[in-house]
Length: 47
Image 1: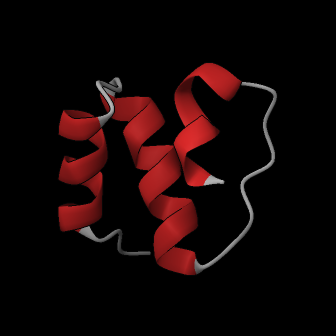
Image 2: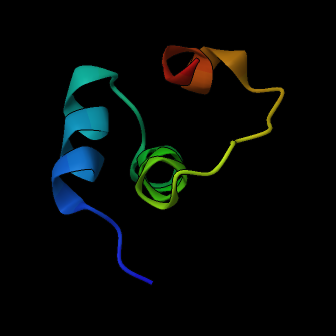
């Protein structure tokens, strides 16, 4: 599985995320899937 590195870098830099959180966000966005989480602090921008 490949993750769009541009998306990954964008989320690390623009949302001040840790690499693991950015990787989760980038993976969901790259695959076009829904990310289900209770972690609103890190993922609220994905709505």
